[in-house]
Image (cartoon, rainbow, N blue to C red; front, side, top):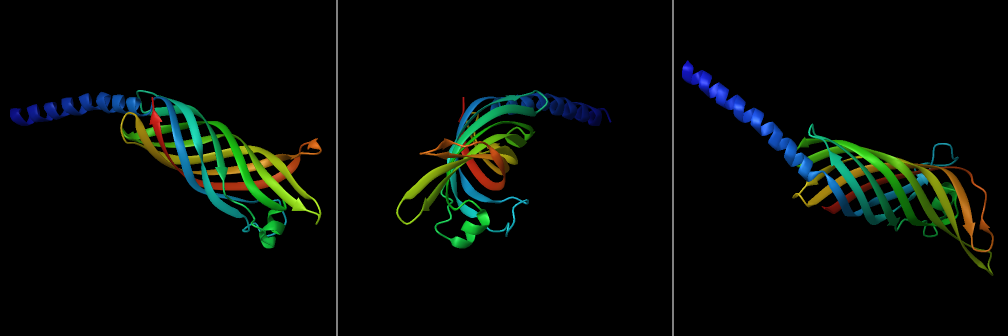
Length: 218
């Protein structure tokens, strides 16, 4: 009996001493500044308020870079701020069905700026699950021709983004992650070479992305 009680006490001591060690590992793995490369799938399409087939959109390969800073608490929660600059190969490629439904003319997806925050929880010392949200500004390059002249203007869209993902620490200095992001753009303005920027107007455009990342933490 005494031997059994001693084993239980020893096991409890080991378990309780392991908790601070696991918390410290999570703090080391998910704290500090980070930089990352991003690749994945990118799709833009009309929003729910736009007439036409909302299933028609433009798909492409997304790519970019991100930076951020995270702080991990002793309890395993992680909060951070982040920013990204991304691009995409998505375009209508003279597909008139996509052209009509997307509602923007012949389009090529341009750069996208994002700034936001995320909050997560380290479910293990090496695995973080998180949600994110923030501001996004996307550019679409519009190409048109009247038979004589060609026009190459920009449409800049302002909106918001939400998402969720999983990050895996490969070491205290490297990580990989996978996340889904949804963006909705509600305001836009044309930036024409010969006319300058127009007044802002209402739009409704959706963007879906599945992005993988690999990064370094300092």
